[in-house]
Image 1 (tube, helix red, strand yellow):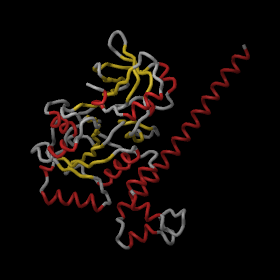
Image 2 (cartoon, helix red, strand yellow):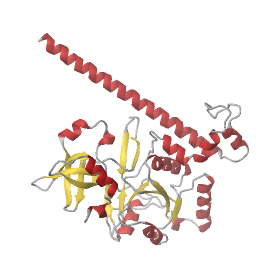
Image 3 (cartoon, rainbow, N blue to C red):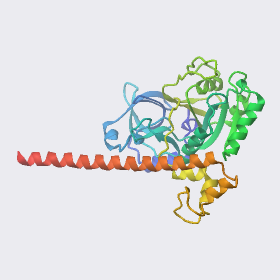
Image 4 (cartoon, rainbow, N blue to C red):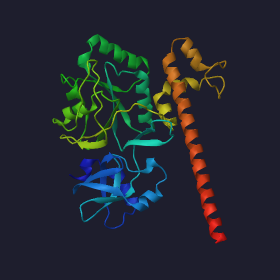
Amino acid sequence: MQLSELGLDPWFLEQAGELSMPGGLQLARVIVVDRGWYIVRNEAGEAAARTTGKFLHTTQSTSDMPCVGDWVCVHYEADKSATIHSLLPRKSFLRRKSAGKDIQLQMIAANIDVAFIVQGCQYDFNVARLERYLVMAAEGHVEPVLVLTKTDLVSEEALAHLLAEIRAGGIKARIMALSNVSGQGLEQLKGFMAPGKTYCLLGSSGVGKSTLINKLTGQDTLKTGLVSASGEGRHTTVRRQLIVLEQGALIIDTPGMREIGIFVASQGMADSFADIEELARRCRFSNCRHSNEPGCALLQAIKEGNLSPERYDTYQKLNKESAFNVASHGEKQRKEKTGGKAASGAGKKKGKRR
């Protein structure tokens, strides 16, 4: 394959040129990330890869480590493995707060053109979760497309109700509805995907992401689990990987997400909740908290029926969550930095006593 077929464009070539790559290094794309090891691919094919010690030493956080979709500068070894020496800047990305109480950024994928946000029409459908994914996509400069799967499990009237609920929530992203069983909607999705462009599947476990990739590739590329009587599938994907489809598009599969923690989402909030941001600028006070202040345009819009209470609640909740996570992460970094300096100072004092 040519690098252009793997998604390389003039923007990435310019970034590579600015890095002044030493002789012997080649560009490659990370196509698999699994528990700290990588597979990279370029014109020469695929190779197992690891990062160099120097790369690890200069890494500031886990979000600076290579993730699926990244372009990296590698050196191929005699045993046909590769070492990753540096990482090209990312044009776009998907990231979240890591699951659990630990306040860390977790990279999901990089250099994506479109994120397919997948939800099932039955057990999994949730507008509030959709809004979280939309904020994530907007923050990372990724175009979102909503994909509703398992349409064979609901009536046309029920599907129409779900679509109306999405639009009523102020969500304007493109929507595609399909069934992996009947094949309805699959051709529309295939026709939307362009050669050389990178797409990423996001969604909870069991919504049919792996089955969808198998339909797109025309073979059992990924393992799939049994489906319960409720229509809920079993989680099968355990690693992030990039797959090149026959028509030339590239698609990234990701493990199902139970938590979609919002982190550093100022731009994402502004894009996903543009209607609320515009209303907020009409509030009487510039520092309005939109709770019980007089002259609050948001509260007035709710009262008049121009803003749904549910969308307002999601907006408030995501703003508070993002602010808390950013503050907590900053405090943790300050403590780690202070602790590191203290340890360094203690080592120097020991040396002097000797």
